[in-house]
Amino acid sequence: MEIFYINIEEFLNRYGIESLKPFLENVDFKSQKRCLEYGIGRFLLTNAAKTIYSIENPKIIINNKKPEFANKEIEFSLSHSKDYIIAAFDKNPCGIDLEYMDNNINLEKLSKRYREKFKSIDHFYQFWTDKEAKLKLQEKPALIFYGYFKDNYRIAVTSNKEFVPHFEIKNFLEML
Image (cartoon, rainbow, N blue to C red; front, side, top):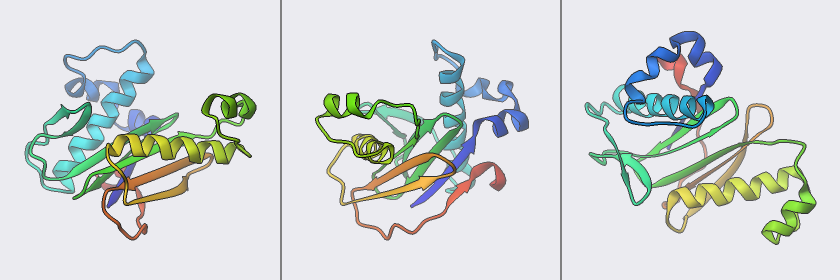
């Protein structure tokens, strides 16, 4: 499994918003933030497919509400939170979730809502990233890895196959 990320501000400083036009055709968003997340996510997926995995035509389709490459040469999962877009790539189905840990959340309210006693902010975000990563996998995971990313981000990665959870999360822009 390989995981790559892009910092949104770094991307915009390097490429500008105009570079996202090919990824935003025939889509409409209610906010510029969502538009950026979608466009940069598609940039990451298609460019990683081409440069890392040598996929010539990395067309993305939606199958069972989950995006995937039309040629099915490699599986991926995508997540975004606050300043980052992150993607996991693997030969097997996978799921990834990234969440910025906001210190201003109401743990008592969230505990009632999810019927889970959250002992800390970290506990809630582990619960939430676990839930989202499993949802993106769309099947029972054989393995789930929990970790941290940068300052104040929680990450969960799932796979339907067991793997050694030893991977490096790489800045994709440094690879171009």
